[in-house]
Length: 245
Image 1: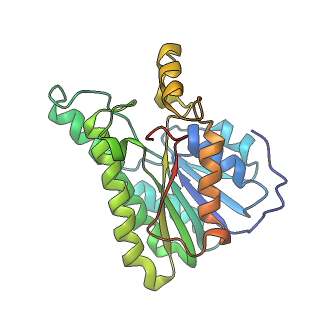
Image 2: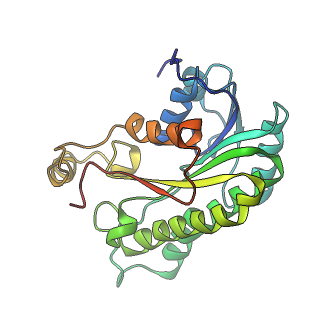
Image 3: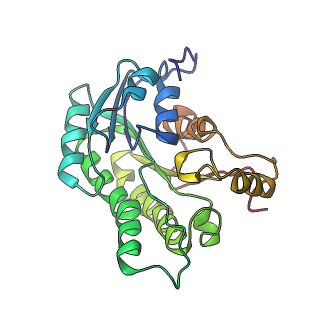
């Protein structure tokens, strides 16, 4: 991924929570040339791919289940000005049938995917500029109860993310902060795994006949950050290749 020279630059100071890989990293790369500043928070101690995607980005280690680490990360981001754009792709899948999942697995999935989003919004809130845009990351599994690469608990966690975004949109509206959700279909990231038979099966189920590239989901995120989506809040932007039709 290289820095973009996209003419649709709109400036601002972004934070991507879970931006060291996958869709998050793709969003970091697409933001280069469009946004002025970028801070990436994720689990690894180092993330060289982030510097390649957005050479002037700041990287900090943080965990969505550790509220204090998120607060520190957003504090660092705010040193470059009020935060205007937030994306939260951090999450885990859980491809286990409902009657086989144990309580520890279920709690971990729900904590990372749902409580992690809650922690991020709360950590971001003191630093948000008027007009800021938060984008949470759900999944097509939110509508289907899992069944693609995640089981029912994963699907439930992503449905909860959609509901959380709607509630946050209502609560933050007086501060002129918008909150939306992107709901990807099956995308070629590490979460999907590397089994070619699974890839083929999932591609065949989409009307477009293929899997999504991370950049295609990231383009939706950048759109939701941009002034072009200024009348959207509490919305879900489905980017799934028609896999539910």
